[in-house]
Amino acid sequence: MREKTLYIQNKLGLHIRAATKLVKVASCYISEISLTYKQQTVQAKNIMEVITLGVSSGSEVILRVTGEDEHDAFAAMLDLIDNKFGEIE
Image (cartoon, rainbow, N blue to C red; front, side, top):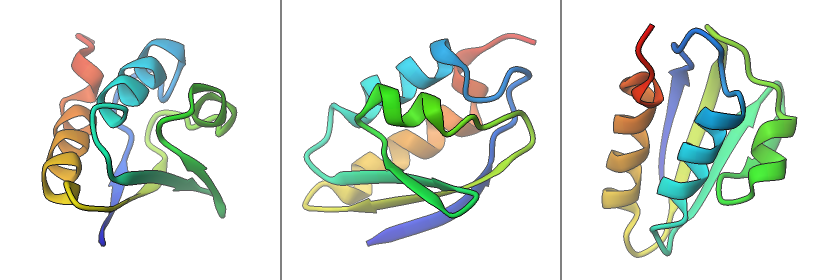
């Protein structure tokens, strides 16, 4: 299992477009990928669960990845979040 606390840095937080990108990347991997925000944990491959978290800009989330391709999945998720979901501010 790989786990890291991250900050959502893009201007609008985990809004629909960012959440869609996150789910799309997570869905490319076999590993189980979850996000925890304010003691609520959701599966990163489920768009409705991700959106309902209501993560705003500057918020702290915990990313957890477990499975046979966890190294690649973890790296891809970190890259997406660290690059602010590809959004230009």
